[in-house]
Image 1 (cartoon, one colour):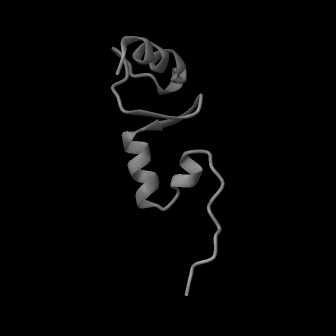
Image 2 (cartoon, helix red, strand yellow):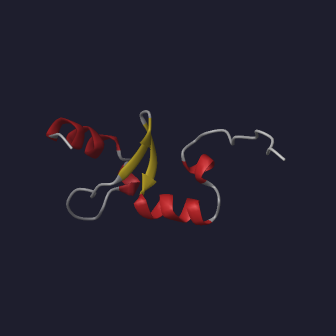
Length: 66
């Protein structure tokens, strides 16, 4: 990750999601410019089948093929 992208990441993580000390560690997940969460949050959303919600996306409701 370039230093410029790392600085952008640090600046765009909400204050309430910042660690008590130091900078947040990658991976931090964004959807465009919207902060979604960190790896633990992504993993939890994967386990609970809520990844679309975690990423702020509409679920893919395509019908399953027979």
